[in-house]
Image (cartoon, rainbow over all chains, first blue to last red; front, side, top):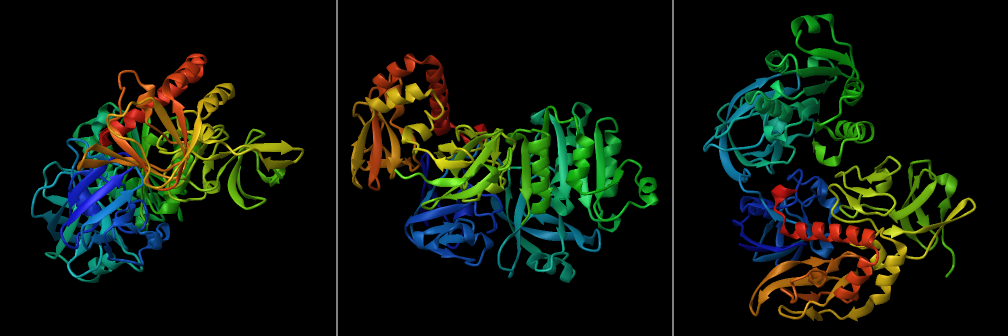
Amino acid sequence: MRIQLNARNRGYDFEAQPGEKVLYAGLRAGIDLPYECATGTCGTCKAKAVAGRVCNGWPQAPGRNFVKPEAGEFLMCQCAAEEALTLEVSKFVYDMEPGACVPQTCVGTVRNARRLTHDVMGFALELERPRDFDAGQFVLLAPAGLAGYRAYSMCNFERGGRQLEFIVKRKPDGGFSDWLFGADRDGARLETFGPLGKATFDPALAKNVLCIAGGSGIAGMMSILSRAARSRYFDRYRGWLFFGVRSMRDAFFLDQLSAFRRQFPDRLQITIALSDADAPASAARDWPALGFVRGMVHEVAKRMMAGKYQDLRAYVAGPPPAVDAAIRVLLLEAKLTTDNIRYDKFS
Amino acid sequence: MTKRLVCRVADVPENGLKECEAEGGLRLVVANAGGEFFGFQAVCPHQDVPLCEGLFDGATLTCHMHLWQWDIRTGSPLGLAEAPLQRYPLAREGEDLYLGGEATALDVGELFNGIAAGTIEKLAALARRESHQPGAVLYRPGDPAEDFFVLDSGRVEFLVGRGDRTAPGGFMLKKGEVFGWAALLDGYPVRIASARCLEASLLLRINGKAALRVLEGDPSSGFVVMRRLAALIARYLASSGAR
């Protein structure tokens, strides 16, 4: 299916497979189309059909509030071309930079699915082909037979690797989390599309790094710490990680975080912020490399980071209220410029 | 013109924002920057998010959704923002704020907003106001590039290439956007694209050489305009990595 896309600055031509969503086809062709969640919520990938029809795979997507279907508007992440399509995107659109990890589809097999807490599971996905991604990126996952992709950030970092590591928090509605928690899924096959996302870290950044994660937002931060540790980044630059959870029963990855801290005891500081309960005395004994502080994660970060915002890039991930609160601190208190705030809002 | 009340001074907290509806039904966000008041379009030009929910530190307004930012005095985009805010001048009378005159396409335009008022007036005096029907062609490749255009309303589309070997070259749809800027450059005497109105469009047509003479008479404004022109051109040449 031929797709002609007109952006504010220029036009693009690309091919889509029958039934393939316009966004994924364009990204696959190396065009840096606008998107954020890539799964129907944020509305960032809004476009307008000028000629040709699209088939909407999820008319009830939460992002429908951002589009006017009567004006031909649609979400590129949910719609496929039914015939040759001309569409318009009211943004500046560029080719991906040389060396970017261009997203692809790939099938993977679930390995080592395990409980991390009462409502968080971890698992690995063994891909059929190796795939590069940047630290902090996510992929879309869909089990065969379950409608629609869900987005999950990689927890690991590896170049040319075939293994992706994920965590999944159980959600009351959640199609994918129900599927994973519902039965033994070792050996199950998942379709993937990715990597996606721009909240990425590369050692070329050459700045101090502040990570603020709420709950399962820790996933991308683990990838960032992994990438940084591998290049001994914290020999030269400082790093702070604040991991917000409700109480100790919701905390996980504490052993892995301790290992990062022990590698860089001078320049890397890791704090677990507990919003609902004080940490038991045993926490400091069991994980002496970590700090445990009572409070909301953005408030704990604000308190402990005062005066340390020079030459800094901040990464924020988690549920929308936590991310918004942290961004408010980073803009208004820390006076960071917006290009030094990278965030990933789950919704 | 009848005066249109926007709100009372006391409605807008110091270094705060307030969404208001002016008499006659125009929604705008009013910012109080240390006792000075500025009015802008009520929603973000990016995704229709109410700007009154944004962050404001007294100088910079940030939309909380995607962190687009603007200078509160001019509405000029900062940082990640790809578009300026439509500004509505406010007039204070006692404890009330009224809508002032409507800002022109030159006032809000990406190249000229915020430069010296006298220079804007001289440029406005050079501008010829044109109204075009849908389908009207403004120029074709090879035509002399003597004038540049400022969009007031409507929509203009560009095609690069000739004959039936053409490709889309983008489009303009925001009040104040500038195109045909080869007329402001040395060494680019002819058009390299065609420009066609897709809708009924209102434009300001300004002779490039005459505009440059005005800017030479006010070098500090001229410097701002040239910096913005350079940024504008870079935006068309950039790759995603450069951003």
